[in-house]
Amino acid sequence: MLPVREYLELMRDFFESGGYVLGVIFVVSLLLWALIVERYVYLRLVYPQDLRKLVDAWRRRSDQTSWFAHKIRLALIYDMATRLTRSQALIKSLIAICPLLGLLGTVTGMVKVFDVMAVLGTGNARAMSAGISMATIPTMAGLVVALSGLFFSARLRQLAALERQRVADLLREYDGESP
Image 1 (tube, rainbow, N blue to C red):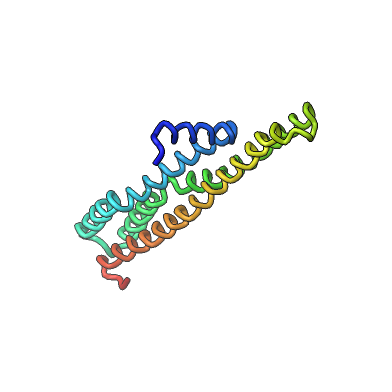
Image 2: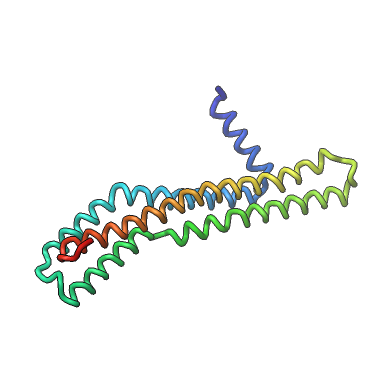
């Protein structure tokens, strides 16, 4: 097992070999995963309380069958759906940005390779290898972050749709309609 100092040196070397674009991808991935974790925490801890309050408030209404009551019911459903899908557009945008940042890393790495080739020629493979790693590492990192984020984003969208339907069914259950 490596000491913490060696892990930190390996991480520093990895970020240096990937160039500045790898740092940007890292920051974007931190933001992406913070939003994803926040959504799961909301669904697990806060949402059940919000749902209970909403259903209790609907049950306490004396009028649940009029046209106005149906409009209020729809507003409550849409409000809950908005809470359930909060940050999903930002999550999708961050996922879409990651491969583009990886492509930017590829381009900047290849520019470095061509600079080395222009100065030293094609005979110095060691000098070109830094640019090649700067071209490939951000691409890999951007794709890994995007693919893993896609899985969790799709699952969050699915959970939000299921819970929206559940809210609609629960509110319909108390106003005399069949679910």
